Image (cartoon, rainbow, N blue to C red; front, side, top):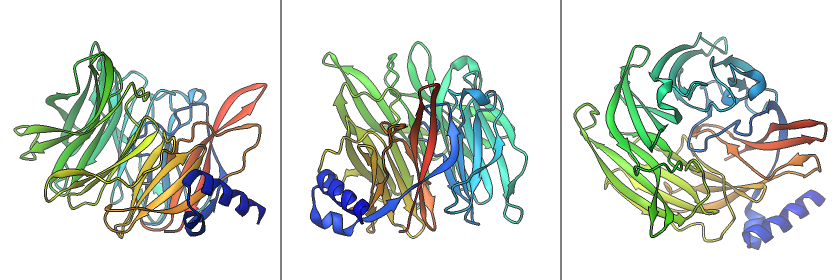
Length: 403
C-alpha cells in the first residue's frame, strides 16, 4: 500500500493529473540475469533488438561487452515473464562497439550488425518451434570494413528482397542503403546516399517496408545560421525497384538547434503492414509523434504529448490487434501510453515502478520493447550496478504489461 502511495504521488507530480493516477496500471519490475560491461548493451535506439516467436519465446539481441569479445553480440532467449534468460547463439567478430538490428519473418530471423572491423554483416537463422532452438547462423558481408559503417537497420518486402540501411563515417557522414534478393550470396549498393554532406555524426536511419511502400526514415543535421539544426526526414522509393527507381526526400520535422543526440538515433518507428508508419522522436528532451498515412502519402504530427517530460529514451510497439503503445522515460521511470484508434490519439496506460538503492544507477533509462507483440508487452530497462571496487556493470530490469 505504501509503494502504491509513492507511485501515486510520483505520477501526479510527473504527469499532473489525478485522473491519470487512478487510470494507470502500476507495473513492478524484476531484475534479469542479463548483464554487460557495455553501456550500449541495447543501443542504438532506432534499431530493433527484441522479437517474439509464435510459441511466445522472447529473443533479445544484446551486447555483452568487452569481456566477451570477439563474440560480444549475443541472442538471448526466455519464455514469457521469465527473468532468467539463456544464450541461444553469439555473433563472431563483434565487440563492445557492435550493434545490430533483428527482424522476424515467420520463423526466419534476419540480422544485420556492425562487426569489430567496421563492416556491415548480414546473418540469418531459422527457429524450430518444437525444439525451441535456432539453426546454425549463416553470414554474408554487406559492405566491407574500409567504409567504417555503423547503426545498421533492415527490412524485407513482400517478394523477399532484403534492404539494409547504415551510416558511413568518413570525411563526411552519410547514410547508404544496400539490397539483395539472395542475402546469403550477393549484395548491391543502391548508388544513393542520404544526409547533408558534412562531418556531423548525428545521422541514423530506419529502413521501412509497409505494404507496397519502401522507405527510409532518417535523421539529418546541418549548419544553419551559425548553429546546428537537426531534421527528421522521409525518403520514399518511387517504383519500388532500387535498381531503376528514384527516391523522393521529404522533411518530416525540424529539430531544435544544438540537440545533444550524438548519433541521431533517439527515435523509434513501427508499421501496420498496410502502409501506415508511426514514429516517435526524442528532441531536446521532449517527445514528438508523427503518423504516415499510406493512402495519402502524407505525414502528420499528432500533438498528444503536451508536457515536457525531459525524455531522452523512447520506443513504440504495436499489438497484433492494431493497438499502439509508446513507452518513454520520465526521469528514471517509464510511462506507457496506448492508442486504440490507429495512432490518432493516445491515453496514459501504465507506470513502471522501481525502488532506488545507492548501488543502482538509473540515470540513463534505455529501454527495449518488441516492435510487434501478441500477448503481454515485455519492457526491458537498463540499470547500472555500482561497486566501489569494480567497474560498473549494466543489468536489464524487466516489466510485463498486460494490454
